[in-house]
Image (cartoon, rainbow, N blue to C red):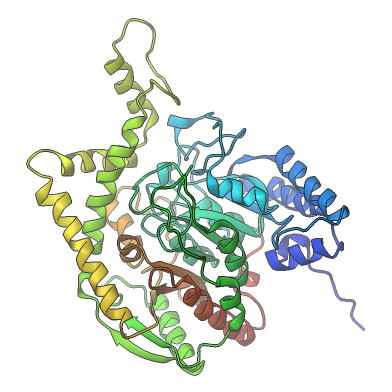
Length: 502
């Protein structure tokens, strides 16, 4: 009889990890140490983390063990490690947003999301790499070097939250947090074979999230399974009086939905506009197979046309840079962060100019210039105002579609992960990576990406995007859970088990 080899701790799901800790089969400290050891072993190659908080993680894990020993009631994720995107403020450890502008800045307070993670007993391992101020689709725009995709370290892990997605795929953490402004949770999830969810705008607090585009930014869960994402979603969501954009409404029953695995009778719309020229053949093959699977699982699938979606990309790249040019004006070398040229001989204006020149990277400067131009006198109505009108049309298209279907589906990204550097000198090609994800940010509804296989031509992960109406996030988990379970049964394992060893 062949002896069963136990699964290493780092390969456990978050739900399995939490269960093992709750039963006393393993301590939270042992779990944290296993992941810290993994980070130490592989992150020099991956570059998923900008800061590893070894002491803080072990102290947090020890506190969970002490509470369990005393018989105190603990949350469903107590003791589970997590990688936090370096755009959320964390008291006592650096928050850089992947920029030289905030190098070494240690916030005096926690973001609401950070506080909720700590209250839930989640063990924060450290802060993950990202495109500077969340501006990018590849995590190549970080001031601290690009992150590699664990499937192929010469390729991008998506952006802007590539560090969080790569940490999951490299088994450095079972859970992660990202932010999604134009697809920065879902797109990295798709190209790394992980699950990423953009909750309804306003359902997860933005207090303490360093703003890129305030009307679009949304924090959300990243995980290796749909259930794990749901557990994390439940831990971070809910009304926050500190956030003026926070929705005062109950959190949808996302965990219950993830466990249903039954979509019989649901109507699912395939977005007609998300196909055609520019889509990789292998991506469309896996997407079409996913649509057929949805039919096999008992859903009714219909084609849906959302004509305004073709205008989403240009509208986004006027609205987002406009808001970024306003938000990043706070980095003036006077209050916090980098300061260059302050030798007593220069004016405040000169110091600000020198600091911004040194502190901001090329992509951030590009978007600030574009946004400032779009907001300038004589151009506001022609550019920013027109883009906001398009945004309204996109929301109306969603309303019309959701009047007839429960959710919409599409590929998450037009292609699989491209080589690092391939699109560095072609901003338009880079921006097209977010073609399918941007409409949901403009409308503020909920969306998920989950892995549905590998593209045959390059053996890299493909993501299925599921889109639900605002505050119907549970529908994402119901559909995602059913698709994931069916695929795992078909394959006999999870997709990440096919990833090459680091």
